Amino acid sequence: MLSTHTLAQYTADIEDYPIHYTEAGNGEILLLIHGSLCDYRYWRWQLPALSQQYRVVAPSLRGFWPTALTGRDSAFNIEQHTNDMVAFSRQLGDGQPIHVLGHSRGAQVAMALACAAPDLVRSLVLADPGFRFTYEAAGYPFPIENVAALLERGEVEQALAGFIDAVNGAGTWRQMVGWFKTMVTDNAYTLLSQAEEANPGINLEQARQLQCPILLVGGANSPARYGNRIDILANTFEQALRITIPLASHGMNLANPKAFNQEVKDFLAAHAAS
Image (cartoon, rainbow, N blue to C red):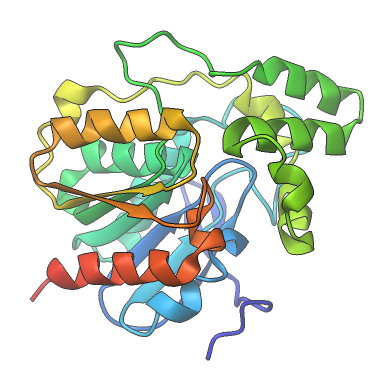
């Protein structure tokens, strides 16, 4: 069985940038795209379970650990991450469609990937998508500039606690286990760039053209704004299946991995290439 503590690391050259990733298993490809402050280590409980049936590939997006930013970088944005994942997906599957799963900010990258290159996406899983839609005002639902200011003063833990609690719910940071705190600390300074990135949002008219099967996943205890995103997407896509992971909030794949993994397995099995 794959160890969740020593994940093998590989590198792919994408647009002259080294994308670091881990992978396990064989079969149809499932691409896992992490969200803010995370990297491929975020999927430690998915790789062993899902690789029993699939070739599971989890990259660290540009600017994240193991080559994490230490300051601002204009190349850190949704558009660049999407372009990277389109090229990475095309390379992985030799141009054939693959399954794509994105969580939180990673769900925006996954959705943007599907809209930019629908031929590459066999199925799409969006877990607690937090993105805005283009008809909504730009910006975050909380003052991320305050988090950036704390980082600039070197108050890293306070900045991370503020961001994690704003995204996941009050009191989340103090409940986080050691390995998770290590991971987000490694990626702390990505928030400086994230606070300034141009966020294009998701265009529902464009997204409505997608024909691939879609699974919308929410945590039973997730903050209401994620459920609101899922409500809108469920009303947009007739083909979408919506499920809720019990006993879990925003990080449902960590809080209740057994239920999360089984729901993903069931969905993928129903939409396999054969």
